[in-house]
Length: 490
Ligand SMILES: Cc1cc2nc3c(=O)[nH]c(=O)nc-3n(C[C@H](O)[C@H](O)[C@H](O)COP(=O)(O)O)c2cc1C
Image (cartoon, rainbow, N blue to C red; front, side, top):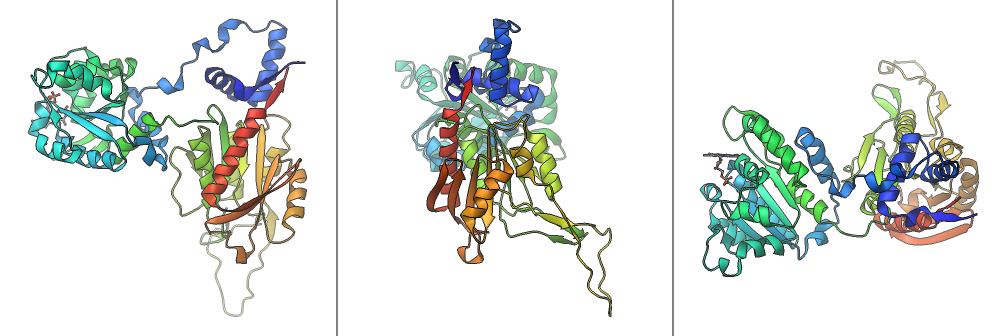
């Protein structure tokens, strides 16, 4: 019998296997096993193997689904991205649109994060912002003349286009994009854009009629096909009074996040793997205004979702009602009740891993009054009859079909933490249980720290007291190690 380690497959093969597994409702391991079975019986041929798989990294924003692509670009950015831009060289091209003034804010944000910015302005751009302001903010001269004798003695336009890690066009006018789509090079900006061998990100901004014009639509398609990235435009009020629609430039923060995403080359040990994670409490209605819930803040689950995403996993977070923001880069499904949470988890599967951090209410009121239950003088308080909620972890952990390769549960206990967690590991069919003592004096529920004991078949691992981000990163390291070792027997 031979064996292969899924983790050690090259990224295209892994991606292909994951897509195929998702389509067929299998885990990656199951799918790999089936494939080998089929191959042995000559049921598949080489032609479906990974050569044809488009590389996701090369995905470019296509005009037809601008908003989708914009969201994807923004979504992938991470909050720990300050270092991503340190020492990065960005060539900013400003073209002549009314949104050019927003560049000044963008330059400040980029520089705060340590990026070095050189700027090229078109002739028209100088009508909207002064080279003086741009130069003062970038602490660099502004380039605008293709035939500048000082800059072109060493073919400066080629140098500028090659020194950069990224060429950023903000705003990108309809005119400049039309020139790019047709390979025109009649000024410094368009010549650099034709000469560059670096990724290019456009932030289009124009009047909605210009954006919708078939010529612009055609040009955007061409640029997308040429591998040019874009962010926005969004929908809203235009600078021109009384005009609204799609054409508004993405905000500087959104552009910044898209830049960070494009320049984020950190290792991604979980790339190609998918994760479903639950977080926060559930709320079980008693009547339209009252509910049963618990003190879970969602901090731990959200931190894990974020750490998984940073490690390259494709993450779906099913979150109960919490007051913390959605983690960037993660698809978030907001739910209220345990039943909704179960449904959302089922819909997010299949996945390579499922991590259940949410404090799901064990019971819900057996009936949920349509109207607020009234207090009346002399009337006894209503009896609260409870019924059991679905056990989401147990359902997934004990699956025989399409069970995630790794199932992790949290056990919040107030006594006999290890004993309860060990029982839970067995009963729920989990691979690991992360047990924590949530007695009020520990301050874990709602607090920033956690003391974890990881229980698996191979024993108990005591972690020191860590903040919830540290717990998340330690768990992600452990998960990466686990998937390194996943072996498919063939
Ligand atoms: C007040 C004003 C605002 C403009 N705003 C835009 C705009 O937002 N987007 C755009 O594509 N063109 C806009 N234009 C038209 C461009 O400035 C014009 O097409 C110019 O030739 C662009 O040159 P460039 O692409 O070399 O920068 C505007 C023109 C004026 C006078």
